[in-house]
Length: 329
Image (cartoon, rainbow, N blue to C red; front, side, top):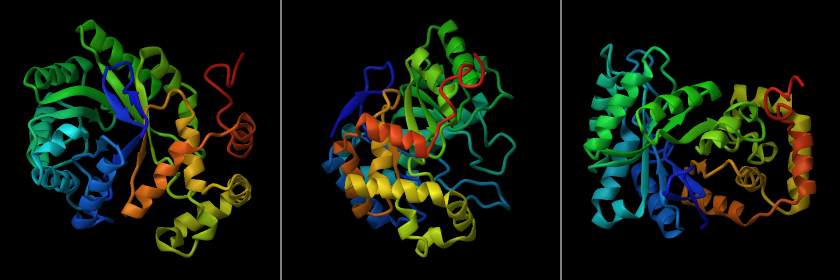
């Protein structure tokens, strides 16, 4: 397993991060335990979850479940040594109750959400506490004051963001600097061969401020996982996915042919492409089985030639570079 500093911090994390969104939903608890055991044995030390993970939110109640955190907590409780072997990351923002203040990034909700996550995770500290989305209705002075308090109390160590725009990252970091805080060390963004918008402004902002990038949905919701051979199976048989496949079929055919010529699985090539980007610290994988976890490790050993990278750009073109040169002079 390869490891890299999380942004400009001194913390080293595995280049594959174990995403646990499926725990409690598509993956039952015994299987989740097996996946976590296998991940640690493979050298994966970066576990990512969120307070809201563990099943679909109930539209009628706008309430999160916290089941994924509870499963991780019960796994940690089985062996006291496990906690010190992983970098544990979770998130705050999504609705976790029916109250008006049971969501978003007010100081009130941040404090309560953190304490609830600690209880579910059965730990006394969170290594990376991530804002799951931007909350432009709450001033940064309030957000950073709440985070500072949690740091002083030893409840969190590092702070990250997720789904932030480039200017949100800059605004957040400048506000943190004014308070003599380290600020953000990571950003989780939607990023894969089919979704490259963050190359315009998010990635340049991360590079400028020394913030690590953690892509989520690296396989584009399964589209980059050899979908043409699996169109009749599982979630890929759904109407919405079928429409996406039909729209992208020419590109998918070229992509899967290229992967076959390389002698590699499409999912592994998609992960390897992300890991070739110097902005990427680690990419999140969300295995539903131990077999899927084992397969993902292959990406760490794949080296893509410049010719192959150019071909991937031709199949899945990005936005044309960084802003403003991508659309102006």
